[in-house]
Image (tube, rainbow, N blue to C red; front, side):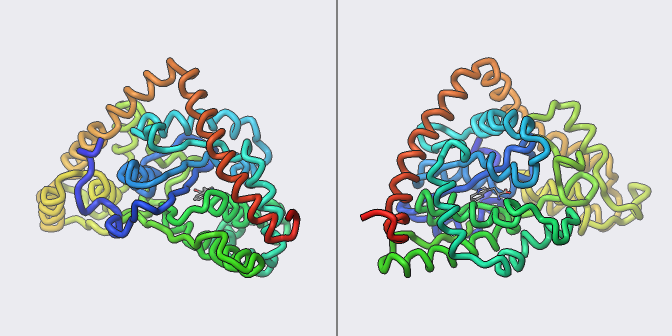
Length: 348
Ligand code: TRP
């Protein structure tokens, strides 16, 4: 799979990763993972695999904070996300896959941390603020939703994680986690929890095919499990430059979704730079450009699709991977909880 990487598609600070780093990151199982997840975080996790300890958390409890009306959907997607992980090349011998709701230590950590955070601080969290505005909650924010940064801090610290590969929308979560870490360590009078840092991808935000934020609900994202036909159709729908009507017209590269995807996924950066020149000058049609993107995406998604199909015929294996990973994670997070309980004078 590493053949799909080119040096400048990798996160800028990959070299700063130490063998002693502990990686924890997660996904909400509310739908199929898509190319936005791949560019923003999954690809980073793949390239870090084997370099240091890594856990991927399927964050079903967090998914319930904004999908409380549809718990069955969340439950169904737990295994789907695990399938996506394995299909892209996550190797359970090197990366632990665990389910959040089965790690009761994380819930206990959340309850303890809630005492260290004010409502005002949660309301100031830019990610929460944006999501509250987007959903039009105003004052009727579900309390669980408002508090999900605290639960995420429990996820990160429960594994004593030092490095969190995420999209840039998650940076406020890391900041809030570190505030909690410092408060816990002050309570404990000794650094029982490490501070963590975000590892950002160079393409943190891949647009949806219509140029808006890629989202499962808008149907504008390209799922990792998409069929070749679906990929073709979605690329066909891609927003380019509305003023670029004939191939001979000069076209805009900025804000052009096809180029955003080529930048993220085409292994031949020089060829893309060339295409951009030709597009700007005039003489390159959208059809040719889109055909290239279809080929590039097929080279990436074809093998993933095949592995996904094979794995879905062997769900016992997938369930086993998740069960074993969750067992490991349970041991790790329980050990952290013991230290944190002591900081709160809950046991000797
Ligand atoms: N909030 C993340 C998202 O929406 C998912 C997540 C849950 C996560 N727990 C985490 C990410 C811990 C990093 C670390 O995508």
